[in-house]
Image (cartoon, rainbow, N blue to C red):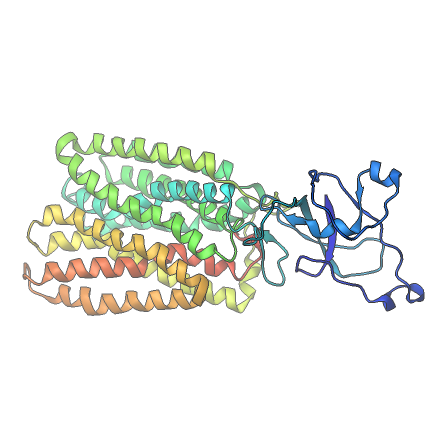
Length: 463
């Protein structure tokens, strides 16, 4: 059933009698019993309800205290009270009866702060299944993104050996650009239509791009297949997968998003080591096809599990809304994230190539291993900063992680780059840098959407 509460906090709030004509509050009608289960609990208070009202499904007011908010209810929305001449927002909650066996415990749902009257379950089976689906989507899409250094190194010595590192790097630059820039359009579509069709389309496009990569031989082949097709597919998977989590979590949004984002780091560990083993055994073509089959199965999990909790917003535009940049806080965060992403993907892309160029011991094998080490650190960096961010503040945690990125790059990788070729200290410094930078940079995926989410309403989270 539905009942009304004044304000954004669940619970009845007494009205000032002076607000009523003659200073007398009209009698409050009994509340309907619709959708309430039977209960054996009793109350010492008795409120008379006519037999007619009882048959029509109304309940006495003294039973109001025996209802609770269900964790599976839809988020509530602010509405205007019609016909009362009162502009006070009221909220509508779906309630279920509480029997005497129910024990007090943690709240099943939480209300967010002022300005967004939405109830979040903060857990439950459906919420954690969405996190699992997002984890699978991130493992496939961002696992590949975190492995692009492997392909950069391999192509520079095989199919594209006649091209410079900078020219080859443009392929993966376009890929990363489209993976993030695509969210500008995909986000509004997610807010208006939900995640299902976006993830389905992205899974088909992204899986197809990896299969086609196995037969590429020319530079323009790789640019079209990896850069354009792969980048578009990654964006279609990544944006709604992360956005859907924000519909189920508010107080725990940082830790839940961080947990899902560890999928990308786990993929960055598995894929490079798998390709290192498969390239010499089955060749490039079949190694990439095996990767494509893995990606397809993971994307299928994401399609089945990722759901939106908010109903589609009526008359919502699917076009980007640039007026939000008029907000100084949002404009500043946008500029900061732009610079952050630009810097963080330089080591991910070129660390493997750096290992080859400096002729480190076992450099051919270490090219794959150093990316796995970086992503192992990133795996912890995706989750732990999100966990602490819910306690110390999302922006505070983000700034601390970025400071650590700057510190490790300037004190570890830069000195290693200045050492002579094949210097014995270069490899230990590179390993330490990969581990620490991976941890610090892991927050760029888990905390960025959480920080941005603090500046907008939930129904605009994808936008």
